Image (cartoon, rainbow, N blue to C red; front, top):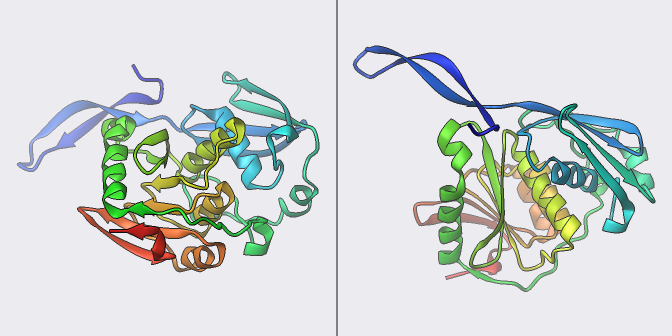
Length: 261
């Protein structure tokens, strides 16, 4: 059986009122504690896979590391649910601002920036363009890849794409975690994201938008809705936001010149 879910017993009531006993696949929710330089930072609730990516993506998003050279070692203990990252030159801003966080609108325990100025983001400056038909096609591809969602209905997913194909696809109980996993992969592999697309199934909130901006992608697209603060940040940070991308329709809220017919 897939270790990402458990089979639990349940009673199903059908449309005709009939009741039947079933075994239902339910997504596993696991705690992951991240240590940085022997300091316990946070415990995230997650789908326990690609946890090294999740830890690195979280550290980068929160300002603890800024380049691959800042990381000396990554140790994962699956049995204990722990990832320990040893850094060379930890960013000072992380120590100053990390405790100024609040619980976000995301799933599980999360943190976010008080203000855009805390995010240390550079505006995305990219003349890259993509056809709307390719965005629709990529969203369909992503939906087909979501095997854990098809089985349990209990996860979000995100994907890093070129204009033609999906490069990396990640699922998790938390939409923030799916993005951090992609950030961690790009960070570790040194991937140029200036011509890439971030697809997500979840709501585009302000913290998700800031993560996309820090990743450096020029466009984030979702089947779901954005928030007004996310759109404010997107306008300031040069990120194109496409939402409600489904059924051959979409709304483009910011920097629409990047999506062409």
